[in-house]
Image (cartoon, rainbow, N blue to C red; front, side, top):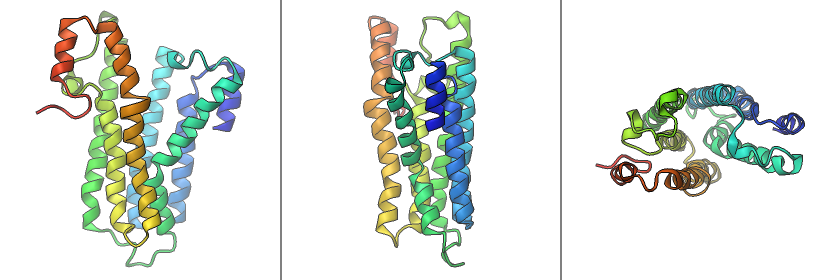
Length: 245
């Protein structure tokens, strides 16, 4: 992250921002997995690696097609104002990975019995995999919609976006909730590790739903389409994250 900040500040560009985040995530995750080679750590860690690789690749490709992130235009001109952005990436990466890091730390000296897979972990694995698929599909649908010139000035309402206004964020939250639920059965003997792991989905949900994700995009959408009756109907009938029944 520090290297990314230095290079990005020199170039006054954020195009490599997500690629650096992907490399940092992969490095930390693979290091943790190499220190605890039990089946639970390798299984749950592999989902984390798949998440980092998929999201990092997608965001890097998007930046290459669409250019620098417009939200960072005002901060990347100065190293001092660009630094908090890179620090937030470091914080986001570290905190989200806590279920995997806590599990790897707890199982680095695990006995054979302690390293055995537990059936109670499987629902969490399923939630995480479903979240990974949800986020990937939603991202692909949104990018395809954005790259279609005929959709300029329009908002997306097809695919997963027809049932959730932010399905990509829903998928992200599901990934880390699922990984916590998958790791939790192995952490019951250590309150410290269990609490650290639990902080991840709470942090992800709180940040996306109340701070940097949903609020900013909802405000932008309301400003752009707030007077459009069709958008008002879409907003009224479509859940922010979870689909309405």
